[in-house]
Length: 478
Image (tube, rainbow, N blue to C red; front, side):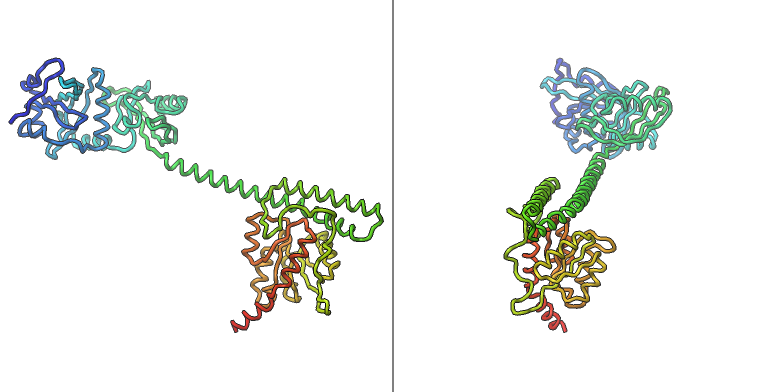
């Protein structure tokens, strides 16, 4: 049974085209099915009759063909005609035609595409080139000398819409104008630009060059584009991450240097003024020493606030200065047993003379034996020849720093490898504390040194049974 043909909106009958010798057919781009074909079109499509052709389902169009069909709907919507080459594949065999395409309205309100075709002979190489171009994933366009679009492949239509001019494709019109001028002067351009697509601003690598229009012979401009937005954004994200890391490293370096340069002299001011306060001075001199210490405490607070360090409570004991009158702890534990046991022995490694003198004086007041050396290498050597209860270790030192010295002491094959090591340093950032712990340091005291904290941690660590634990481990391993 033959299909009942719809009527045109103007009342015309479709079967009037049956007498035409050129192929004519109607295609519904919404349902992706044929609506009508005259006898010549049935022959072109290799269909036995109209029913067989109309039963064919064209819904599985390639993205390029679908984009091209959408472009035709837009281009012919206002009564315009479009003339171009099409290659169809009826029953799998290619047929190339020169088609005039327009939009016609049917009586049922549908708008369909009218194809009026004439078969053309096209070389195989040309057909392959045209098909490859139309199915290319990258936008390709041809423009005249004023930037008007002469040709756009389906990818270009999908990206820019119908008849997008050369300059309008660029986010920066100045860039577009300059590239068009260069092309018309015979110069090619290959570079990265931001393009204004229907999906928004995208980064495209373009290749733009002049060529001769094969139809008119005039100089035209070929624009070939490749979307590299994902790569550009990934590179930008990586660069931003690297910049952020560099800024964080610079910030940490600044904080380290700032804390070291400010806290080291403050350590001497606060420490020696505390010693003077305990030296039995005359009232006027005692007042002077107290004022010096109070001023140092205020400056220390300002320094802590300025550096804005978030110090770990378990390692530094906080950043607040000791409240009340400066001085030494009244209830500090004795350094030697009351029954005459030996005095606590401390090795102090620090390159600063004032720091060594201050800590030695503080420890001497409590009867603690203190030996000092001024770099990490000397500290490692001294650690092997003394029966130490605790090692105090500065961090920033010449020859060998405190981190490396602690690491080497922990690698020694002797009891000293287990001696408690306390970092005594101005470098107390969280990241730095983690490094100290990683190399085997047991604790940290921040500079400026507070006597109560110093003695509390010394006595706590000296009283731990670390020697017994080491000896038991050594016997078990033997």
